[in-house]
Length: 88
Image (cartoon, rainbow, N blue to C red; front, side, top):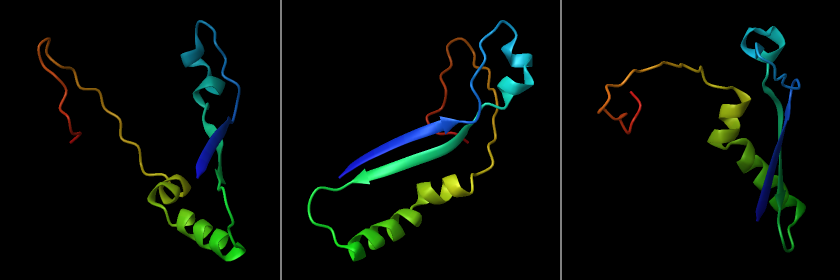
């Protein structure tokens, strides 16, 4: 099976000296994610329906349909300190 994914942005980014202050630039996001699944061989309509059902119950699919809350933070490390391997 081959999987192809593509996305479409909501707006075209603007690149100029003060793009962080530009409210249109701050709205930049991905508006559509489209995936296509290519299967070689004989596949019945029932098998395709079963596969679509499985895809719709995938944790990644469910996350993208109802995105989680995004929590961002900045941690300043000492010069010889390394970031932890797991995020807490």
